[in-house]
Image 1 (spheres, one colour):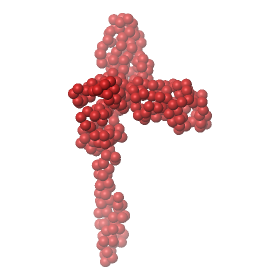
Image 2: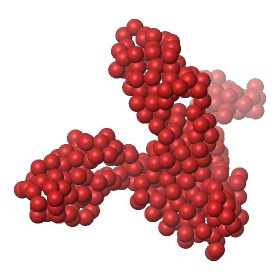
Image 3: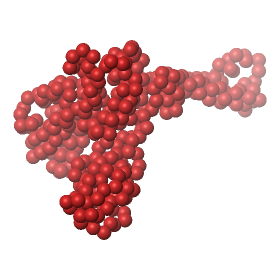
Image 4: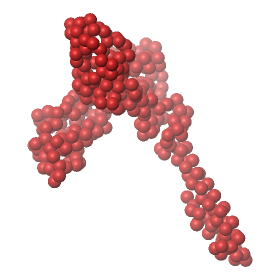
Length: 344
């Protein structure tokens, strides 16, 4: 991009020596104003190029670009879970009852009556996004107390809320469709139909897995964890509306394979075991997310190399994964996740 100074120098050279173009002269001031406007024009032209090409486009410009190919940004989704509510038999939990964990609120989507001392209530986070993904046993409060309710909890961690699709993920889906074109129900079609569902983070397509005409779609959620039934239902509804007639399609979640890590660490000064344990958990989670449904082996060496990247780790020894010191085999219907992390 030409700068204001470069533009002015070219304009002054074109005028020639017969006119006064020194600083403060009429021509200099006139040229300066024009050069400022032209510099901005060059900047805008460069910006237009960035907006027009897939590798550099962004925000609404990227949405308009990929929209020409029938690809649209996934919206954020609300997390859902089942609450276990214990109390006095006959106590009714109305639809719309509100529960919370810290400042995250959930509303019941169905009513229930406590029977045998317990009731199960489906709830949905009131806001969309990953902020509704919370640990097990976190939702323990009710906004408007109900007489007869003694205890409230979510027995499982909530991890099915998703943020709005990022530019990078949207761009990646566009590349898949453009570079792997669809054709009458081929593998690329099924992969695209799965990945366009909000909440789906990855997919493996298994053609002819149970004979001619059979296809299995194995998915994970956007956190690269096992998908819940609501996501599988959304997946099925989308694919069934688009697949060729005659195909028998099975929709399943990948099965989580926990990796239990034990390692002895040489700590950097100023770090504690607790801090390093948290850091190792976070970096291994990110690493396993990056390779979900793409490999049939979890490399022992690469797990070790990830640990060496952790803040607070100088060196490590005695690393075991699920009690062993070898690579972990993983099937095409499994997704590796971080299990326990024991740092000594």
